[in-house]
Amino acid sequence: MVTLEIKDFPVYVKIGVFPEERLGGQDLNLCLRAELDYDVWDLSDDCPLPDVVDYSQVIASIEKSLAGQNIELLEVAVKIVGNMLMDKFSRICSLNIKLEKPVIPNGLSKGAAISISQNFVRG
Image 1 (cartoon, helix red, strand yellow):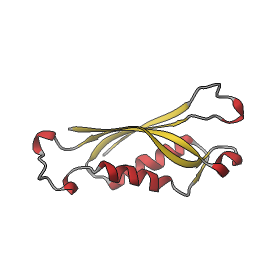
Image 2 (image 1 turned 135 degrees about the vertical axis):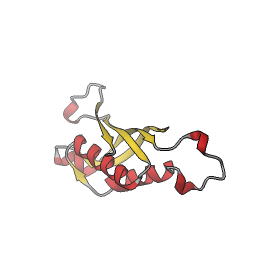
Image 3 (image 1 turned 180 degrees about the vertical axis):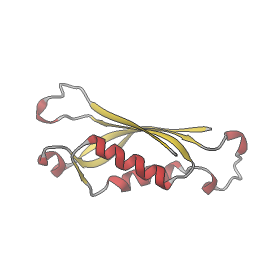
Image 4 (image 1 turned 45 degrees about the horizontal axis):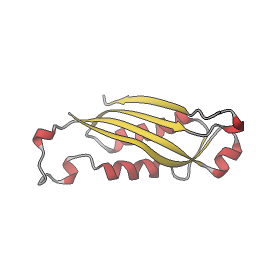
């Protein structure tokens, strides 16, 4: 198994329970940890890219899956990303997605951030 990690990737999303949050949109921080169904010992630089998970395609797919959506809940955004990645990349065996909202509306954050994470497992 190979583990792919993406840490603190900013994703622009129109998200929030309050309409003014969705109107302007905001950057969320995305962290991802995926277990892939191949082993580094089986790979070489001659290996064709389709035989591995291209992390640039993972990032582009995440951005595309959330672009143009109006989402109220972090949980829904996590579900959208997780389901899309599991559907699109068959080599992902399991996946943990965490989305962090660094700005909480109405001055409630006091410097804190809120995050939601979810595990996805194939089969």
